[in-house]
Amino acid sequence: MRPVKEKILRDVVTPGESLGIIEEFLPGEGTYLDDDNIKSLYFGVAVLDIEERKVHVRPLGRERLLPVKGDIVIGEVNSVKRDTATIVIKKIENKDAWLKPSFHGMLHISQVSDKFVESLSSAIRVTDIVRAKIINNKVPYQLSMKDKELGVILAFCVNCQNPMVLKDRKLYCPQCRNQEEERKISLRYSTPFKLQ
Image (cartoon, rainbow, N blue to C red; front, side):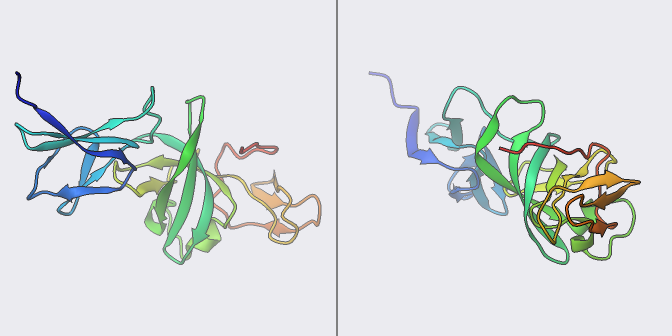
């Protein structure tokens, strides 16, 4: 009888879930280190390689539809503070499917533009649809909107919540005629835009 080389630690783990600490075992494929904590990068099964003392996460499902560093993603702004914003990542660009479940990304004020931004709420607002780039492989994902094609691709009027159109690089609401000038607009801004 052959010795068992692997042991299932957990049947189901989610991205960002802690699997143990570095003193217990080493991080393997499908994991990342967050300080001394080994965390799952995927929704999958946590498996321990007994000989190497290394934990792996095998993704569940046929395809690893997960954001990784360098991916361009589409998301909705969920909350905005002075220096950081939370963005719900709904889609990886150039992939056919919407992400289910969605993932969370963090946008720091320093990653909005190469120019000085005094307050994040002047660049993006809650419910804005943004195009951003993932700049790390940890959960929550860190995002950047520095490129000209990154930024807000759809905004809604703060007065009437209708989609705003772009006129002379300024946002204009055709419904109530509200104008907004300070958002970090992507060159790809378009209306109508469908986010399902």
